[in-house]
Length: 79
Image 1 (spheres, rainbow, N blue to C red):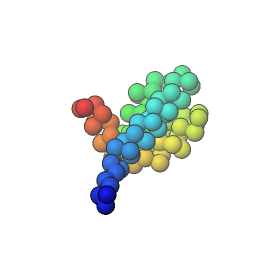
Image 2 (cartoon, rainbow, N blue to C red):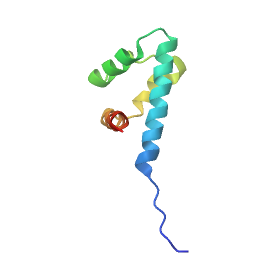
Image 3 (spheres, helix red, strand yellow):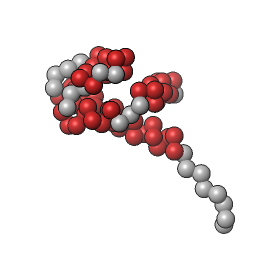
């Protein structure tokens, strides 16, 4: 009964990143932008103006480190 519990923190963080990215994607679509182009522009330049303020998308994506975002995206793509 005294077993050590391990919690997959990385998996939880990846889920948070995915949820945020989907929110940002939808906000960009709502505003009539090409979400893929805008997100790639943001990742390459780190210029937050690529992301709309619609639905607080800009503030949400800025909470994620770009390296962490890229890692999560590559992991999702590969799996």
